[in-house]
Amino acid sequence: MKLLACKWAMQAVALLIFMTQASFATRLDLVTAQTKIFIYYQKGGPALDSIAAHLLAAGIKRVSGYLPKVGTDLAGAKGSVIVLGRVDSSIVNHFVKKGVDHALKGQWERYSLCVLNKPLKNIGQALIVAGSDVRGTAYGVFAISEKIGVTPWYWWADAVPVSRKTLSLDIPDHTSASPSVKFRGIFIND
Image 1 (cartoon, helix red, strand yellow):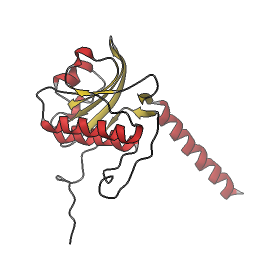
Image 2 (image 1 turned 90 degrees about the horizontal axis):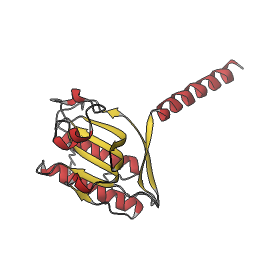
Image 3 (image 1 turned 180 degrees about the vertical axis):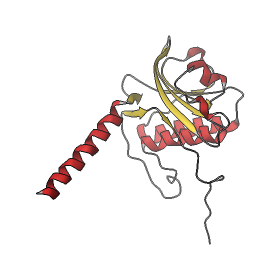
């Protein structure tokens, strides 16, 4: 009887933790009948920002069939957007005075994710991916890819993501920890 009561108590605690985390998450529609996400990065910024933005767009297409537009000019931005860049970049600071963890400055390969509702007149929602450095930004973008179901192994292991006509995410504000190793990579021992 005590074992059963303990099991129920543990399940109740797990449910409470899940509900608490879910309550702090913001729903972001990437692809629906009404919403099509756009991706923006800093004009003249690091090449890796452009690469990461285009890889995220390709990942969204793999899942939903819709290829988001990727650009650097926010003048025509409207609806829902993903904005990526270093925490000190002008494009990130255009959206966020608070919300992004500015303690990221000077850190090694860290990133912050936050969703802003109605941050600008024509923008309903903005997912801000702010990196402490160029690689931190890329890791933040790849974290979003992972959340939509795209694994980095899709081209090595034929890991095809599950197709969905609508694509929405519940994204809590998050700041990553520093990596436990200075340089990350893959070594295949033959």
